[in-house]
Image (tube, rainbow, N blue to C red; front, side, top):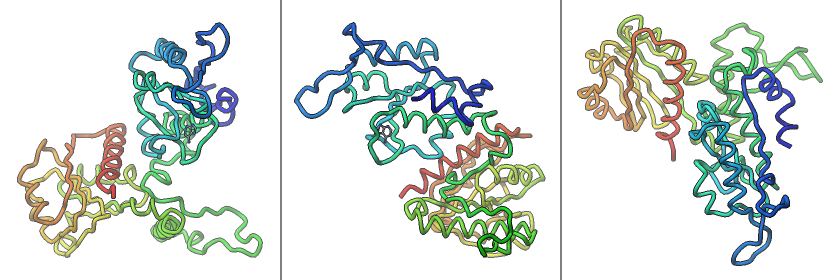
Length: 346
Ligand code: ADE
C-alpha cells in the first residue's frame, strides 16, 4: 500500500528525483514462527490480536542499519497527539525517519517502550492500520523538503502555519453560474487584497474551526535602529506569518502614538540599538502579550524589566546576527512560530 501511494503524484516525483528516499520493510519478513505470522493472543484476554515484540524489534533494527542509529522512530497510532502543520515542518528537519505501522489491536507495549521516540496520530478516528497514517505523514512532511515542491506550488508560510485557514480562491471566468468573483480581487490594490484575504481567513476559521481560532495570533514586528534591523524585520515577517504587521519605530510619529497589544498578539521587536528600547517603546502597553526580542546582545537584562512593566508576559530573546542568510532567517522564523504555539496554548 505504501509503495503504491508514495510512488504517485508529487510524492512519486519527489522520490524519482531523489529529493526524498523511501524504503519499505515488511514486518512479516521477521516472523519468529517460520511462517509469516507476527501476532498472538493478548494476555488478559479481549478481542483481536497483538503484534509480537521480536519481529517489530528486528524490523526497526533493520531500518536503523540503513538509516543510521540516530533516525527518529515514529509509531503511527490513534492513541497520540494529532499531527499538525508545525509538527510536519519540524519532522522535515530530521535526516531520517522510521515510521512504524501497526495492525490488529496494537503492538506489545514492551517493544514500543524500547524503540519508539514519538507517537503520532493523523486524526481522531481509528484506521485499520498505520500505513495510511504513514502515507499522510510522509506527504505532509515531504512538502517541507527542499526540491519537493516547485516554487509555484509552495509559499513561505501556508494555511494552518499561523493557525488560520486558507482564504477562498477564484480563477477565470470572472462570472460563473451567475456568481461574480469578489470585486476587490480585480482591483489591483495589493494592500486591500491582503486585508480582504486576512478577514476571510479569520471569518472562515471562526466558523469552521473555532478551536484553531482560539490558538491563532496576530504577528506585529516592530523595528528601530539601522537599515539592517528593518531589512531583517521585513525578511523575517514573511516567514513568520501570512499577515504580518510591520511598524517602523524609527518614525517619530509612531513613537508618539499610544499602542496596546492583547493576549493573542505576538510582538516581535527587532533592533540593533537596544539602548533606545525604553525610549522608543514608552507609549506601548500590553495585556499579557508574548514578546520576542531580537538584538545583538545575548541576554538584554535591563530590557526584560522594561517589558515586564509594560505588560508583556512570556519573553524570549534571540541574537540579531550580522548579514543573516535565508536559512538563518527561516530557522529563526520556525523557532518563533513554535514558541508562539507554546505561548498561546490555552
Ligand atoms: N492507526 C490506526 N489509526 C490511526 C490514526 N488515526 N493515526 C495514525 N495511525 C493510526
